[in-house]
Image 1: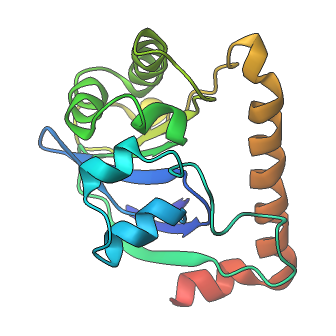
Image 2 (image 1 turned 180 degrees about the horizontal axis):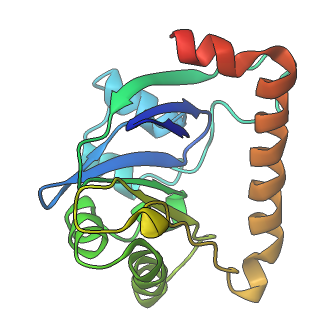
Length: 189
């Protein structure tokens, strides 16, 4: 996500998600690039069937899997005062529902909410790496120094490789955008 002057531009590949958290609700902004998500969009599976499918973690797009990568872009999205932009891996949303995400992300400062969401996902079994980043837009009483808060927590030891891989993929994507002029193209989108 690129944030500037109360607006966001999002680039997405894979099954990590972006949510807009506002007025006690979390609205998914991105589309998952997974086999079951595509089947749900096509009407072949229901949401409930998708949650139970053994193929729910089969990814149809990912960074590094193809030479020419198809990246979904969203924006500019206006971020109303007091809302939060939440970025997370499937380790969170697979075990913590959108209403719980909204409740926790709305009820605490971003750094506390991110930690609480990771703890909640671990309490629900934490079967995958859990990454959470929260940005809170000004307008809810926070001062300028508190405007942007992100939290990065180390996943449990058995997920350290997945966390490092995710970080490398994010840095690689950011570099690709910078080198290829993707940010200018994304901003014009």
